[in-house]
Image: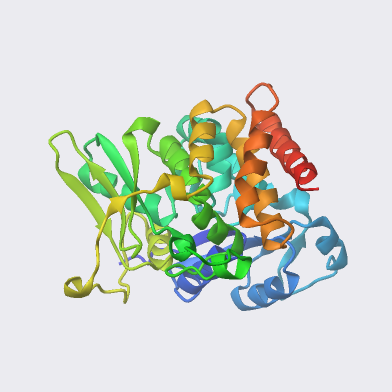
Length: 377
C-alpha cells in the first residue's frame, strides 16, 4: 500500500492562541508538515517554534521586529520580511493555509491563497466579516475552499456536510462569557478575561462579553453559508456543549455537540473530510444542555454588529476597526467597559461612502481605528 505523503501546512499566526493549538495537534503527527509559519512580533516564541517544527520559511509581520531580528537563523528556516507573507500562502508546496492570526492582517494572504485554488482553514473572523463577498467569490471562481475553524461555524459546516439538504435556519450558540455573572460587580479587564468556559486570546474574550464576537459570527455565517440574516438565530448556552444546529423545512434539527475544546474543530480542519480519534469523550448523563433566548440587550455590541452586517459594504470594516481600538483601550484601562459600544456606534455613524473593494475595505478599517482613537482621547 502506497504511503500517503504528509499534508504541507502554512500556519499564519503561529504564536497566537489558535496557532499554538494547531501546533499541538499537527506538530506531533506524521500526517502533517509545517512548511511555513508567520508571527507578528513574538520573535522569542517564533524562534522556539521554528527550531522545533523546522519549517522552510518563517515570516515576521511587524516591521520593527523584523528589522531587529533580520539576522535570525533558527535552524535552517529562511526568515522573511512582512511584504513576503503572501508568498507563504501561494507557495506550490502548500496544501493547507491555516489563518490563525488576529485582525485583518490575514485578509490579503487569504484572498491570494483562495485565488490560487488553495484550501484555507479559517480561524480568524475579521477577514470574512470585512470582505466576505469578495473572499467567497474568489473561492468559487478559482476552486478554493474555506473550512471554518470557529467552533460554531465548524459545527454548522459539519452538520451541512452530513445532511446535504439546505436548511431553513441556522442556530449559533453563545456561552455569554463573564458578563453573565457581572450583576453588582465592577467590570474590569481582569473580571472580563476570566472566561468561565473557553481559554482564548484577550480581545476575543472581551468580544464574547460585549456580544461583538457573536455578532461577528452571525456575519461570518451569512457569508460562509449564503444564509440571509433573518434565518440565522443565536441561542444562549453557557455550558458551550452544543456549538451549532441546523433546522430543516420539516421541523427536524441536526445538532453538533462536543466538549468546549478548540483542538476538536482544528483537528477536523486538518483532517477534512476525515475525523481522527480524540480523548474528549462526553458523558451525556452529566451534561447541562440548557438553551435559552439570547439576551441581546445585555450584550452591548451585538446589535451594532448585526446592523453593520445587514448594511454590508464598508460598514463591517468600520465595525472591525473601531472595535479593535475600543477593546484595546478597555484592556489598557483607558476607558470603562460601558464606553466600548458608544465609541463603536459613533464611528459607524461616520463611515465613509466609498466603493466596496479590498483597498477601500482596508482603508476604512484603518480610518475607523484612527477615528475611534480620537473619540477615546
